[in-house]
Amino acid sequence: MQSLNPDPKAQYTSVYGALKKIIRTEGFWRPLRGLNVMVMGAGPAHALYFACYENMKRTLNAVFHHQGNSHLANGIAGSMATLLHDAVMNPAEVVKQRMQMYNSPHRSALSCVWTVWRTEGLGAFYRSYTTQLTMNIPFQSIHFITYEFLQEQVNPHRGYNPQSHIISGGLAGALAAAATTPLDVCKTLLNTQENMALNLANISGRLSGMANAFRMVYQLNGLPGYFKGMQARVIYQMPSTAISWSVYEFFKYFLTKHKLENRTPY
Image (cartoon, rainbow, N blue to C red; front, side, top):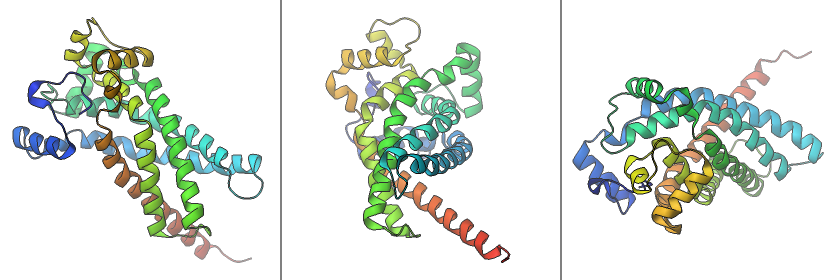
């Protein structure tokens, strides 16, 4: 849905319509292409992400706000965690998006990695890294600030409360996703190097740089181009962040409780 100049056979007007058409014309499993590479990247990326966030939040809260919770500290901690997370996930995103494109020549994640490496070099996996950070730093700042704020409202004692984690995580993800959609459209363009769009814009070679991506989106689709796929992005992020936070908070509670129970009293 974010494609600037899609093939006539791959033009979609709604999330449901897109899913239905993809399954009908390309097969039932087509929407799951790239799943394996995302699973491989998500484990280490999220381990770095939450470990960095917790440590930075604790340290910065002590500096900025000696008692209680500082939204500034949460935002900065989220931004720092993003640097590590995206360093792992950016190559996975490149492979996933190239596999998911309509009529993609890549039949497996390994063949995609090999082809990109051989034809474009190692830099291709990080061509959109600065764009990804430009998108994800505001995304994660909004995400973490909103999550922590909502937790203060619905779970002021900050105990383990699955319902509050799901609600806060889902709403925080939805707000952050909607606000950063224009940056995501530009990131997708840099990751996929969409041939039909590049030809239409008379660009030879490779497109690089956030500013160039912004100009090209406006040149081809105007202001509405920056919000292509926003509905799909919000629908994707809401359950994603709700699941992520609820699972993380559960294991945080379980491991902390287990550690305290096994601690030998002095």
